[in-house]
Image 1 (spheres, rainbow, N blue to C red):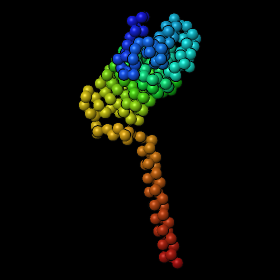
Image 2 (image 1 turned 60 degrees about the vertical axis):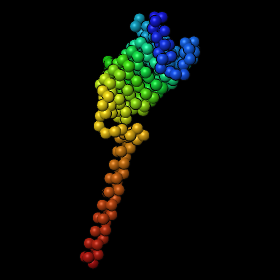
Image 3 (image 1 turned 90 degrees about the vertical axis):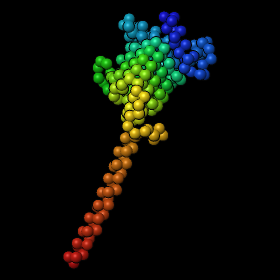
Amino acid sequence: MFETLKNDVDVVLERDPAARNRIEVMLTYSGVHAIWSHRMAHWLWKKRLFFLGRFLSQVSRFFTGIEIHPGAEIGQRLFIDHGMGVVIGETCEIGDCVTIFQGVTLGGTGKEKGKRHPTLEDHVLVASGAKVLGSMRIGKNSRIGAGSVVLKEVPPNSTVVGIPGRIVVQDGVKIGDDLDHINLPDPVADKFRQLENDMIRLKRELKELKQEQKETEKGKV
């Protein structure tokens, strides 16, 4: 147990250049507090003390801004950077040496039963604001870009960006066209743009039909 707690602190010192010493990390890092609270809540959950586990997780959420369901399985050396707004669902499984930034959701897609949250393998990084939804596996050493929405399985050693998320790098090789990191894919805006173009086209055709009708009526007169 003490080795696990030490690892939770050491990983912050390794990955966060702002961290100065162990005392500072133990007293001021909300991500560490949330992980420690979860480890206790998860122990209660495993003992079938569901209410106590859930209650502890909600107390931790109140103080840290990080919500981790007590049923979630978390490995060693998880690093939650900043952490505000992070949500980790009940059936999530997180491997070792995973990094999660603020605003990340590891959630489900509906009211399905059983395994309904993602599995993150070792050394995965999920950047700020990303949403990983549903029962899928994110392979080892993969990276999820900031603001991405991932709905499908991700193979190992991949980089995923966009809405919906798409693989742009796999095993060090670029997939498809070069990515414009400023203008990420936006299918909702694309659909509205298509509808707007269709309306313009229909108005133009309607105007032409009215003009033809007027000319026909004049010819009859």
